[in-house]
Image 1 (cartoon, rainbow, N blue to C red):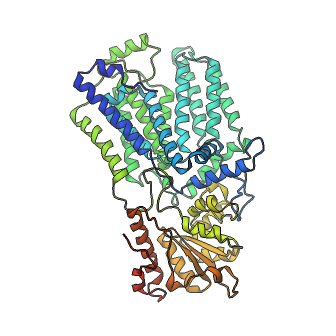
Image 2: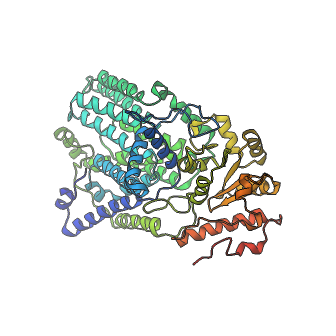
Image 3: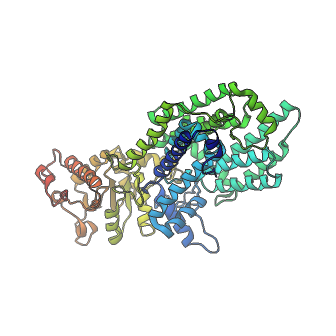
Length: 591
């Protein structure tokens, strides 16, 4: 880990400059910690937790990880093509010990450690004082993935693979240690996230880098055959997971999900569709090109290829932004810190006399940022943290900062109703995103119709389920085909309000529960003992519950959503009188 206050900062600075540098380092580190402290929302985390819970509950000596779609009643035998046993085990262990509050703190600590690892590889804390804006760019890139997802392990494991290689390349560790560490890190990566291919890509680049270096120097400082053996070992240990050798086929499924569902998932959006992350990628590219122009010594092949690979990931999908920005920023800071064309002599001297230096360790006098750069470096992290933690909340969606469960996002009230009053028949949920909470809250009592694990369902079915969100006739065909007793509709999606209105007008469905996240409908039946007869509410007395009472900002947004829903299902239908929308019995009054 980086030193607390680097000696170079104190040695090359006056007392005033030393205090400014120390304060700048503290501001950026505190900003990283603050941005990593988020509330846990119902995006993917519920089914990851449920997977680990089921695996450990059915375990013998070792956990029994799922290889089929056990959580779904539509395709329960469909083979899973996603495996995250390491990630799921870790977050479930944290949850069991410290609940959702522990997951928030774990998330913060792990991203903070990732930033410290980047600092270590980039030259230490002294480079924050000398090049604060590039580090700020890296922090903004990290923030794009600061959510509780498997990516939280992917980037640090990839950086550790890079660090292991560079230590070996400089003769600091033995062949055996490099081989064992590289193999272990790849095995961990393959059991943490479906982007395990990045580890094998890095090992491949190290192999070709050694070949290229040997071609240029007419001798091999690192034996390419040994690196090929390490790569082969990485491929073999990738198969040590619940799927076995079939894990090698997962990238094809991932590419299929990306091509078929780009318009359905925000993080699958192509480069340019979202201005802010695209701008971060462009800035990182410009910074890297600038560092190339300033560098006197040639770049290593693996460095150029890793940066190019990061940009390709960002071009394919916005979820790759973090890799593009962090890798380009890291290698740019190294170059800018260790020498430029203006001090090429000192750089050449360092190459001959300081072969044992860490990558990025400064061999030139520390650069002193200008007033404008310091102003931006101080103000931007402070403003970003203030806006994130204390700014106005304009939507119930998105990342919420703090500790514990997110507010206004989990359908707690409606799912509690279903747990206490489980229907005999199946549940049809729209959208697929709602399957997250259902898997965690209702399984094994009830299984889901569909959920957001793209590789867990046949492609045609998943596309039809998504199309049903927008096309009522498709929804009707699914109802006819699967004959659910209960339908759950997400209220955050206003296009599903139209489906709710048509289902209610048909007389075939009766509302039985409503909260700010979900409308629960039961199949109408004249039988007095039917589910709808026992729990149904009349349309003109449809009452919502489950509001967030301890946060007025969230509660106001929940009220707005419910009022919008009432107005949409009542417009031109006579189902709900407009003056009923203000009835305190329907929407609890604000206090």
